Length: 181
Image 1 (tube, rainbow, N blue to C red):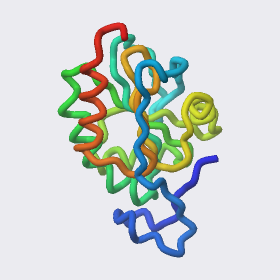
Image 2 (cartoon, rainbow, N blue to C red):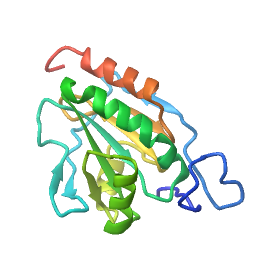
Image 3 (cartoon, rainbow, N blue to C red):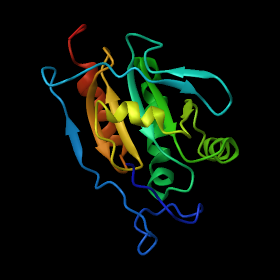
Image 4 (cartoon, rainbow, N blue to C red):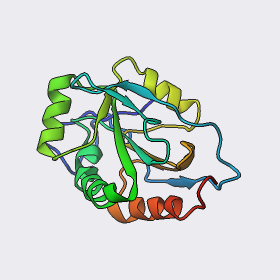
């Protein structure tokens, strides 16, 4: 089960959630060596504009998955860092895909406009996409960021808010791996 945020949607400080029933990730980072990586993560769905989205649509891409929703304080706080990394890494063959299991299209699209989000987010209102991801890697908090290697296997996961430096480092590690590894 995913923990969630319950807060005023204008709140961007993840520390301002005392007494609001909020349980966030602790920022813990886990990486998997090439030998430890399990099954390919093959997620698909429809974004909030009705377009198909799939993790394996570009076979050689490093994919960054990020669970989020609009009223989640750490999701709002990490959005600028995610945008920076997504923009800086677009030419490196890195794709970003969001997964949002809470918001309706209006709230999700408003968040994306407010934060200049350019990547698609799967509308996962029935929880099936996160459930499929959970079969491969534990996703215990929102936000959670998962980095998939070029073969689509989980290389790294951050539970809770991620910063640009950490995410850049994780992507660097995956991009440095030998082709076909």
